[in-house]
Length: 115
Image (cartoon, rainbow, N blue to C red; front, top):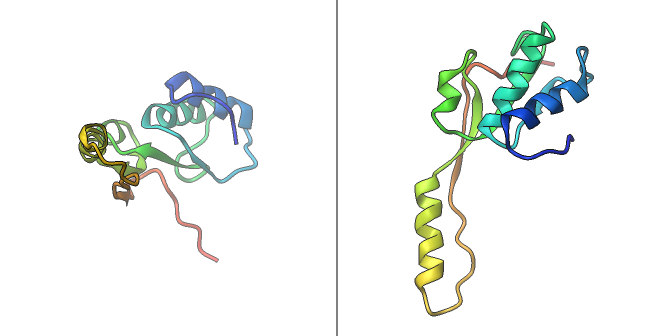
């Protein structure tokens, strides 16, 4: 676990903290931008994604499809999250929080390890 925010620079810093020969096989980044920072820093270290390191993002925006390799992601609907938030704000009654669905989208940045 590396501290940081959800930015590109935080992703780079996290990967630098793991080093050129990371002791991890995969990184789950807190956002698409952070995952791209991890990806680019891993490349700068000479690592190949996903052969040397698997990377998964959280958000699932179009950014995941614009980089190479395309990033696998835990995708969430920002529209549904917005609707749920507005419903919470505009409803006079106290309601339990609404959980919006997520999906795992497998693209090119994750290697499956077989036993």
